[in-house]
Length: 529
Ligand code: CA
Image 1 (cartoon, helix red, strand yellow):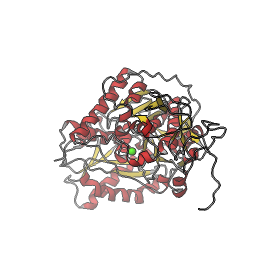
Image 2 (cartoon, helix red, strand yellow):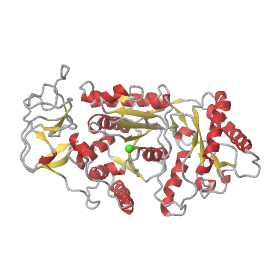
Image 3 (spheres, rainbow, N blue to C red):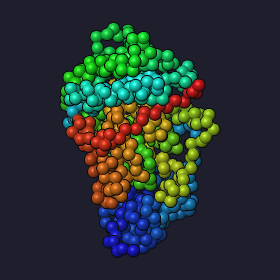
């Protein structure tokens, strides 16, 4: 073994009231190690060897007493635990699984945080008041059948038209698998349909709606975008519905006529987008979606807490921050309902998670409520602790609104929002785009090259090792928190400032730099035919 000088012992505590902290050091800490000044538990001698990512008791914990991490009970001591002991899962009585009845409703009243004023970014103000962080022409499609044609048209627009419109960042086709072969009248079909509609209205697209349709599909343009239900930017009668290029139209003779038609339609949209200029807007116009994927034991220790700190900054700045991922928050539902700003918000959380329970039940699966052996080896004692590691992305503010899948935020819905979505990275990102996201934060431990064409994605590594190996894919290294080189607060502020730079177009994310774009993936709980 090469002799590398070990880092000083480092423990990480999530909240001041926690009676356990996490050992950050590679290889853990040996019994007898004395925790140094400046870290939680300073002066304490470890009674056991404590592996990396695992918990050490910071004070004596009596039998039956709550073990507090993230400021909440993650279990109850099965016997008395002395300060300095390794608090492993065999010492803990798991909190009982929560049904959706009898939950604490809006019981936690987070103190009103001091407003954060004076932070701005350079964005594209839209007619409806929303603000884009990018200036993109997005071509909406009603059905998968047209995707190949739209892809060819987009390639030609980029080659022939885009160089004439330097203020337009990109042209994209909103390709998806929906539109035909689906039970479009099933009650749950409202979810994919409103998702597609609301993505067309994402603030990064400047209100310029242009649709390519096949003609015979179930999802007709007027069903996707009913006349009068969305703003029209050109001179047409609002009652006429969306501007549509229909491939089956009799006027199309040959493939080239379809492409020419799409190019001709794109030109005025590009002209209007190109005339827009970035202007200084308050940070309150950010609509940030957060999620995690490829998580590891450090997700809940480094990256997610830093996102949570940043989330609190965003709320203090009057911005909107959305967190999601039903299956990852389900086992900490009482943390959500208790942090709801009002009983109505708590009821909406219960309604959404109850709907999702029944959705999973229809597929005869459960939500795999048990942690994996890998989770336990990494220090996560049980699902309550794992869920808290995910929920911590939401920070400490009250939850002010809840969105059903595919719904769009109203302009007056600010602050911390729970957007109820599956945890699948692509489905979650797609639904957050529909909600009106103009910036995306994504934390990862194992590593993923995830990116979206529609919106910048800021990726946060949970470990320095990943940030080092994926140095041109990760935008922020939250692993420095575990290295003792940065605090959660410093990393949260770094993230907040980076968000303003990326929103302003002053910086590009690595996913933008390399044009790493994942597909839109619709959440369609309705049958296909
Ligand atoms: Ca995810």
